[in-house]
Amino acid sequence: MKKITGIKGLLFDYGGTLDTNGRHWAAVFFEQYQQHGIAIEKSDFYNAYVYAERKMATQPIIKSSFNFKDVLFAKINAQFEYLKMETLVDSVGLQIVNACDTIVLDCLKRIQPLLASLSIQYKMVMVSNFYGNLAHVLNDYDMTHYFQTVIESSLVGVRKPNPEIYTLGVAALGLPADACVVIGDSYTKDMEPGKVNGCKTIWLNGDGWEEKPLISTEAADFMITDILQLKKLL
Image (cartoon, rainbow, N blue to C red):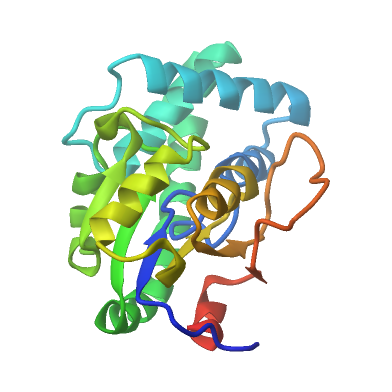
């Protein structure tokens, strides 16, 4: 891979990028449903997943003191509510939560040396659609010190794919946009708004869950399939 030059700032997505190494959370959950013996059509699961995400985005379910395992449990509760499987929350649901939590811990342990190295070379911010508790989650994982600040959708009042959330990220870095790189797993929520802001873009193209096939990938300047490949680009 060719090194990217002239870069001084990095804007990282969180969910699906740092915590799962490019795997969309819908794909992670669906795999765990299968592994824990829940026979369900992919479309039915996705309807439950979307229901849960919308419920958590519109209702005060997530508290600022929640760690990520608390968030996972809230997600399972809402998914099982939609699927009318509430009686399984404390058994199969909890098993799925524990498995997902292990996935996150393994991913973060693997990438922390990379973040430590990059944070010495670059100014870094996080730009994320989240529930109002991301600062607590990052502190719980001992990751806060890598980032200048966190731009979180529920706190700033704008959500991806609105480009304004990345405008706030660039402003927080205090750098020209063309000296910044957006790094994320979603083409439509990270690459496109990053490019609108004039940033370079690195697409972590892993196990996604796009509803429609992409017509063009021009908004992604670079593509990787593993977050550790950043070492070869930066």
